[in-house]
Length: 311
Image (cartoon, rainbow, N blue to C red; front, top):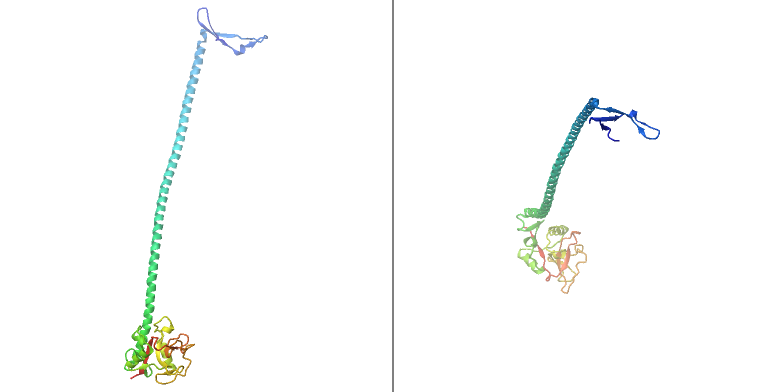
């Protein structure tokens, strides 16, 4: 629409404001309108319109300022809330970091403590093994001392019984004194003739076993006198021989041995080219009566037992 302003004949502007209620269409489809012409007399209305527009602008400005202030407050509050939440999260993060450091430190301390405990356990096991070895040695020493104590007590009892009646290192039984060469020397051994010669040099002779009490006494006395690895090496020469007549065993006091139960199973057997003509007594844990076997008088060397009448 064209600007509804025209100039009058005297050069002043004339405003034409259409009234919409005066606008109408004709039958030809073209509109017609009537105008209310404002001239000078329309200045008051213009000022009023301008004033209203100014007030409206002021109102809008105030509203914009208020809205801006409120938005700023909301934003500030949001920032404060966000800042507070962030501060809390940072504090929690720092706390967790501190706890994580404490956990790592505690883990290291626990690991070091475990290593020390394992090391101490290994050292303790070594000490236990060492102590066990020491205890085993002590136990063996105790057993040896107990055996020696038993022997000493036996010797003391024998010495008390033979005091004034038998020589030193001789044992008393009834009216006879007995010398076991093992007591004097564990290593010195002789053949049968040399053993008898030693007894004679002591004023005695090889033992003659002529009763069960004496048989048991000999067996019990030589129980702990073992000089060899087996029973055949730990025997003692006695005064019994069949050198005169093979198979006829005679004691050195010329008494013929008629008891067969004292021989070990299969003895006497007289094996070997030189024969076995002299008797040996041993300790038998199974049967205290089967304690004799025959051996070569000159080829074998053993301990011996001497006997003489007590004073």
